[in-house]
Image (cartoon, rainbow over all chains, first blue to last red; front, side):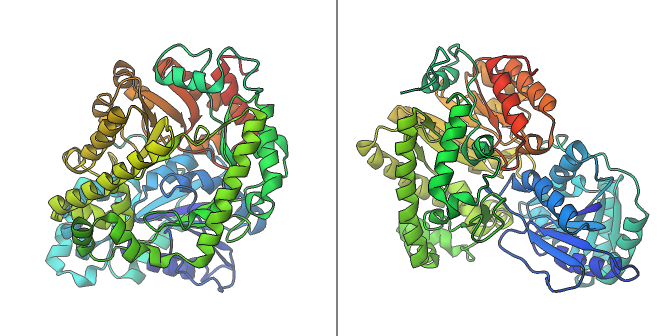
Length: 208
Length: 379
């Protein structure tokens, strides 16, 4: 069972990306995929697709519940559905490293855990200037891969600026941008080739 | 009363001694609420609170007795909460709306789509806003369930009194107050709220102040009828990973000071439920009312690192074993973490999971926490 955690602000394109990833992962192989959505109050993926299980998980107190309930949900999915991949769509304010840290510390049976932060390129500058800089910075530094979406809504030069800034600021991350289908294709290749457990320290982030 | 016959301090006295840093006979332990049910009956699950509440209450009471009564107990009838949440959050009920083994599932709804809502609150008050824009989402069924909720609370209180057990809210002596920061961040959605804090800080602060003043007035009114020992408030999501210290000091901290002042004036203890990593704010937190303030963390702050500040300021901690450790970690890991917290916090610690016990906590981990609380070896 491989775990892919997708985080990023609400409206950044997480659900669209997940839909495309599901299609790609099931394109060549008849495999089971499970999706856990933590976008509280919203379940947006179709549930009627073959070999796809969509579950919602929020919990008792909005903030700290995904990590606590995740093991229960994963155990049940494993037992009842045995998915090859589990995609976790974290809520807009969630920190990927909280989930991946939990996986690292407490779920040794999950060998692969990949964190993807989705970032809307068209709103990046405005968001950074309007009070979300700390939140976005935490989200970007918490994942393994940064995906820049909605590049078609930004002038090429501006897109290059954003991309360059992210590459400079997060040199240990892979930054992927382009059309959603191309992004999904590139991610798909990385996912199927990834075989290294991730080491992310979820206590390492502090207020800047 | 059968209360704590095995131990020197009765539960409540032990708890208050921890807040006062006054040498409790052992560290208080709060393995509370639904999580303990399986200790008494392995078939117990959260859905039982909805499908067979009276049976569930008896199981919870029995479990608390197995734990020597050295525990806080609670009974949660989730459907009744939907009419009560001031910000319009709704809960899915295990056994009714979601899997019976899951905990209550909180569904956040961002009901204040327009920032003009702040203006309305400033001009007409929070209660007027709530009545006009939030209460309309509550259904007649919500209110019927709320009636049942209070009925079950009363029934459970009677059972606890009969068994000599202390309830989670100290037998009704904890007043639950939401802070304006939490309310508006839920109503607007947290990201939008953060943007509001940058774009219109004065308006946000004014609306928060209106909310908090009304909350304080409500508390004072209830205080005339009920001798509350505690006021419980919260600080959620506005943590070191989401907000700059400058914005925190401007928007969030004044609210904490407001409730601190209110608690001092009314001579009650303040319990602050804290979700997120506020490690960098230990210096501020240490300035709250000494020996009268209890911080309830959720496993993401580094309490050991904060301990020098908190112990210096005589601020006590309720926690702070991470919920994922309770459900997935070993009993050795839980025990070791508890002992580290005891070493760091000394007398000013109430051992618990932060911020709540996950319902899939391992039973052996609850026992490990209790052994650590008693200072007994794990094996």
